[in-house]
Length: 174
Image 1: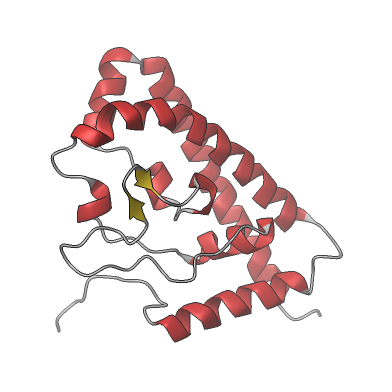
Image 2: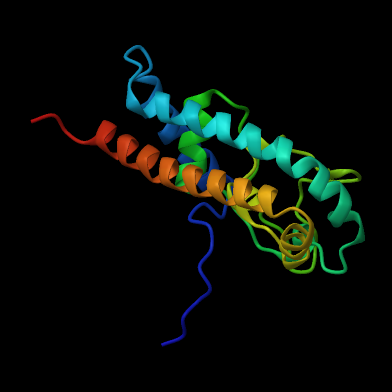
């Protein structure tokens, strides 16, 4: 049996729209009773905004000179947790999933980097630190590396919690 490389569960425009509609409908039916899911999404947003502040200088120093930019080489997509977060926070959802043709850059890559605000990017685009960035931080800014790792770990845990809250929203009441 040939194992295929995992990919996005919504790899067509129709499945992308259907996934977003399903997430949006379930969250909208619970919005009048804000609870743990919406509190968790706000905590995630706060930490991503803090990470964005930390990454701005780092990316300015490393990305323009990178010999192998991740925005060109990596295959990325929004996972379910990303969609839940975007809809829970009322953030704009891109019209398309960021799938790209092999060898082509991410469709959101612009002249000055990503065209999406960090809060609306797939999580992988925020938590991934390339080897050049890690080395720079280890040599010159261990404190910043520690802070990034701490925030990244917190967001990862909060994203698991967000997904569990979302699953409970859709569970039948007993």
